[in-house]
Structure formats: structure tokens, C-alpha cells
Length: 343
Image 1 (spheres, rainbow, N blue to C red):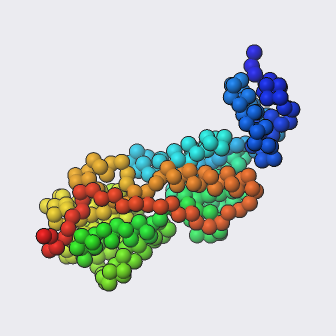
Image 2: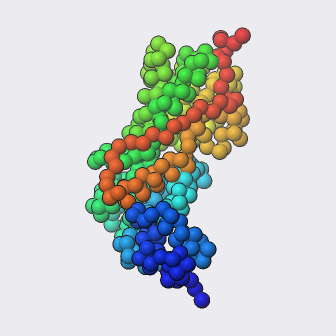
Image 3: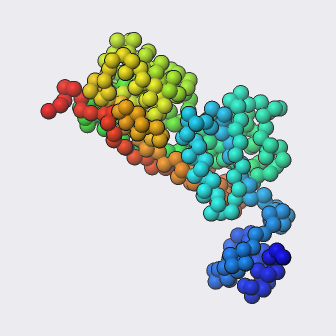
């Protein structure tokens, strides 16, 4: 015979309404009473009916998590880690995460996620660059939205970013401290807030060391930031006849593509050219040489977004602004002292 809410109430010595308040995470319950109820729930192995909870609270306890198709793949594990951080944190607050992807050419008539059509979520988390049409659609549903690693051009939102500018500045400072002065920048997707922040960090580090920003050393015209983009960006850079001693790539995918180009053209890393990436994806340690990069706490970004969403839902308020998650420099073997600066 299955355990009921009446059994829990009897075990804890409280009323049915008190058990219901604890289950639905209401705040006006004495801590000792809450603990008695929670202990009884655990001891009796009681699982409240989600249907009953939805009817009682008018909440689904579901949160939507949306990525564009190109951000959710084995080739780009960054956002997979972000999602896992949100998923694990959601369990602490008894929320369920419903994950879906949408195409980059999203159209309202044919690509609406099912959980939005059914109004089966209390809020939506969007990670990476998502179509503005989708943002507008969710806004029209009057659902809370939090963005991760992105902020749309229209409206005031809550966004969770890694410290892009600070991380890029640390990467370039590392190269300068190794004696490098001709440092190239490889980037793409110039409209993306993260890419803007990383270029600003590159500029800041040069300014702090009184080094000029040399336009010919900047290659950021590609709309993508993939391995292929890194290869073609490096190719365009060197075909201009420049000879940087170091390269800062705006992410690890582009850094990997750049390394491939350098090797094919008989340039040794780091003897001839040092290279630094950004993200610290798992494949970095498998590269030859292993990539120096900026480590992003990807799971923490997802967890921070989830906590902000819960706060918005439970306080029934809007939280506008940016949250920055710290980053750190991880030095591996793709960087070394500049050739003319070695003792």
C-alpha cells in the first residue's frame, strides 16, 4: 500500500496543511517543524504527486532550457556542461529541467518548443546566441527569462556571463610577461557580447603595457567561432605577411583550428609562436602541445542561472542585470618565452 500525505502528517505529528506547505516550499514554517516533516517524508519514502502539487500551487515546477542546434553537439561541449550545471542545481530546488534545441533559422510558426506551446514551464533559461524571434515569443508569454553567455539587443534582462574581459586580459598579460609584443587576435561573431568582451580584454592588456593596437594583427571577420573559423582566420592573418610571436584566440575551437594551420605551415608551437585559447574544454589537454587557456566554470554558470531563476519565481520579481562568473588562467605547453627574450 502506497504512502499518503496523511501518513506523513501522522508520523510528523502535524496537520495535512502543514505537510502541504513544506512540500510546496512555503517559507512561514518553523525550522524545527519543517525538519520533522522532511524527516518523516524521507523515512516513509513519500513522493508527492506532481499533479496535485501543480493544482495546489499553480506551478509546474518545470523550467525550460533552450539552445540553438549548433550549440548542442559533441563538437562543442561547452554548453553541455552549462546545461549539466543547471540540471544538478535544479535538483536542490526540486525543479525539473526540460531541454530542447531550436534551429538558427527559427520561425515562430514551425519551431516553437512543445513545452512553450503547452505552457508547461514556469520560466525559461536560454544559453548561447538564440534567435530574437524566440526571445520575443517567450516575452509575449510573460514567462521569466534568464540568458547564459548572451544578452539580446532589445529589452532589459538578467544574463549570466563568464568574466570575458578579465579573462582575455589575463591571457594577453601572460603572453606579454613571456616577452611577446606582437600578439595577434583571432575572433569572430563580433555581435556576440562575449566576443566583444574578449576583444576589449585584449585591448586593455595592450594598453596597460603601453603596446599599440595594430589593426593588421586583428582577424575577426568570420561570423562563426569554430575550428574551421580558426584555421581560415590564421590563414588570412599570415597571408597578409604579418609575423606575430603569439596569438590569442577568442575560444578553444578557434585556437585548435589555428594550431592546425600553423603545423601545416611548419611553424612550431610554442618555439615559433605561442597560442592561448579561452574556455578550457576537455580536448585541450589532448592537443599537441596541450593548450594554455582561460578556464571557464561552465557548470557554475548553469547553477548561477538556475539559482537566479528560482529567486525570480519565488520572490515574483524581476532581477535585471549581469552576473559575472570568475575565470582563471591555465598554463600548459602552448606558450613559452618569446624567441628574442629567452635566457
